[in-house]
Structures are given as structure tokens and as C-alpha cells.
Length: 403
Image 1 (cartoon, helix red, strand yellow):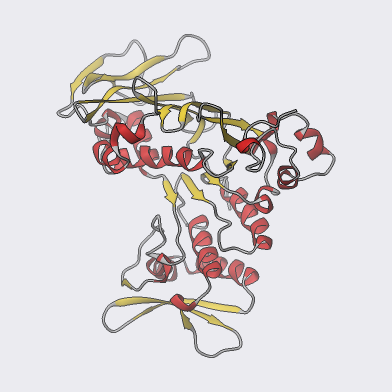
Image 2 (image 1 turned 45 degrees about the vertical axis):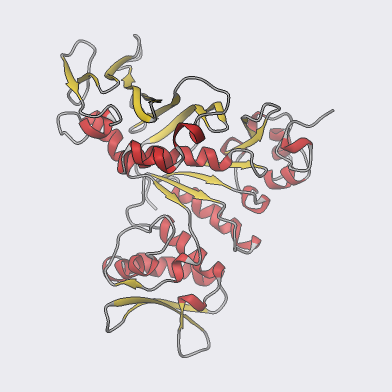
């Protein structure tokens, strides 16, 4: 794949979001994996990206209600709003842009307490906010390169639960705001289910795999019609991983429905996807997602190892590294086989402290890990042999080792 420039999140800070009382990830890499025992907060951290994406695509109130509102979302025992801070670059060597969002609730209704975008144009001087909103009202500086000396435009939104970036980002006169809106609305958070891929769908090509993969036949149809070479590449990789697999087809039925069929050698007739193995369907789905001709700029995958043979995870990790030139990938996992192919700065380990709050630490910052890797060890092996400072579910509930 050719390298291209895409927006990259460089740091993330979350406060008061479920078990994430105050978590900060710095120097986030294009490919990032999150490890931890059950209940450590991996899925909650993954859900931060899903929540933000849904706030932009479905509206903040709907994303809020879906997760049980303040009662379930705000960290237990904490006061104040739920806060998010993203620092990202639109392209390499462009200024870091900081997006801050604080959400609060009053009389059962959510509202945007504060929302801002800021950057520093040059190498000197203080950062300034070119979008600054509080409870539905605020100001924004227009133009390609907002400058602190430029004129601010005051705006008032109808609903204090409406995101200013989502609303103003639809206007061409706010290109920097629009760029963030396009970035976040284009995120793809994958909750692939092998059962979902077995269904019969209405015919019609679709460009992108859904969260659950239930439109896999439609995406295969799209690739057959528009990108046959890309589909051949996907199936070539799949056939190397699945013995005797020959062909995958999206077959149009007379009633307008679409069937996914898989042909194995030496048999003449293909079988329906609903009779294929879970592993075959999940590997096909992951390859379809990762080799999308126009991939999402951020892809999140939860526990890709489920239903896959451990020997296949090395190849999948290689694909993830290759695709990270085109997309930023965030992956949760329990698999040492998968993690064996990662670098120490790409892996974060999570655990819950004595108060029940999530703590995160990068493996490259753990004592002795870099030295072991230089001597030829692999991350997954070190994890399973207990060399990580925490993350072992059988030791002190996953917390730091007691010495």
C-alpha cells in the first residue's frame, strides 16, 4: 500500500467516564493495542471513541441515553463534568490541534458545558482558541488558517446539547472545524460478529463494512463490481490462511436478496456463508475492513483473536501494521500471540487500582521490557511469563506485582 497522510491522534485524556476517572495517553502510535485483565477498562477506553463518534453522527443526547446517562456514565463518587481532550495533527508537520469537550447534566438533560478547538500557529507564542463555546453559545474564527488577530464571529445554537463542531463543521467557511468533523464522523469502531455475517441481505453494493459485519455480502458485491483486483488480493490472503478455500461470491437471488457463498476445493458446489466456520468469516471480515480501498481514518477493533487460530494472528498483526500507514488503529486484545508482533511503544496495559479506577501504562516504560526485547524476547511471551509490572489477572487482581 502507498503511504498517505491522514489525521493522527497524538494524545487522549479522559476524566470522569465510568472507570476512567483521569486517564491520559501520550504519544499515541498509528497502531495501538490495549491489554488488561477482564474489567480493567479496555472496553471502556474503546467506548470513548465510539461515544465521541456517535455524538457526531447520531447526536450527543442519543449517545448519552444509550449509555444510561449520567448515572451510568460518570465515574462513581466523582463530581463535575465528563471531559475529553484530543490532541491531533491533520497531517505530518502541521500544528497540533486540541479539541476539548466537557459534558454535564441538569435536571436529567445533558448539555455541552464547554467545547473548544485551539492551536498554536507558529513555533513560538501561546496556543489560542479559534472555537470557544459554553452551553450553546460562543465564538469561532473562520478561514483556512485561523489567527488570534482575526475577527471572531459570535454564534448561538438552538440546543445546548448540540456540538458546535458538528454544527459549524458543516459550513465551508470553517475548514479547520470541518476537518475535525469529517475525521470523527469517519471513525469505524468494529464489533464484528461471525453470526451477523451469516445473514441474507437485500442486494445492493455497500462501500464499507458495518460495525457488526452484517452487510458483508453487500461489501463483497461492491468490491466485485468496483475493485475486483482488491477483492482478489483479499481472497488470495484468505486462501493462504484457510486451507482449500478457492472462492467467495455474493450471489444475487431472484427475489432480490444477496447470498454469500464460499467454495472449498475439491468440491464443485459452494456452501452458504451460514455453514462456513466462524474463523473463516471473521478473517474475511477483518481483511475486507483492513483492505478497504478507501479505509476509515481511524479503525477500532475489539479482541480480533476470537474464533481465529493462534497461528493466524501473526499475519493479522502484520496486516494491521501495513494498514496503519493509511489509518490509525486502536485494538483491544487478550492474545499473547497477537501482541508478539507489536513494538513496546505500541502496547498499553490497563488495570484497576485499589479505588477501582483504571490506570494505563505503556510497556516501553516498564522496567526491563526494552532490554528483554533487545535480547530477542517478544512482548506476548514477556506478558505471559509475568514480566509486565501489572496486567496478570491471577496476581493481585491485575494490579502491580507485590514484591
